[in-house]
Image (tube, rainbow, N blue to C red):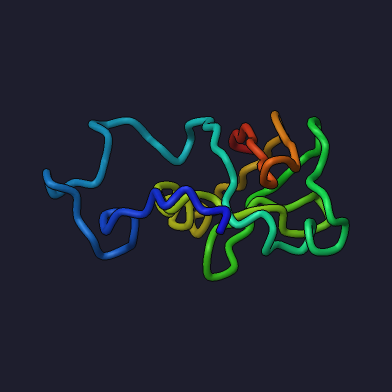
Length: 120
């Protein structure tokens, strides 16, 4: 529930894309800003605690806890990043940190949150 089901085998470490590189042709994906809808919102601490989603403008960070999550500055998980962003775990291991902001949120018909992120 709440997942966009964007998972691909190439989203997980150890898997290779069709061209064997997994990259985007010389572009440093670790340093690129990105936007994404969050997944599994209703299973995360923020929704469980507040019974709502964070308002537009809420500042976020990305945390890696077995899966990548967007969390408030205080560490309260808001939603999971789609698995297509799993490559960010390696970027974070190399010392890169990401900050973001909620750009859209709503509770009906289902809880939804979208966010923009950039390198801190």
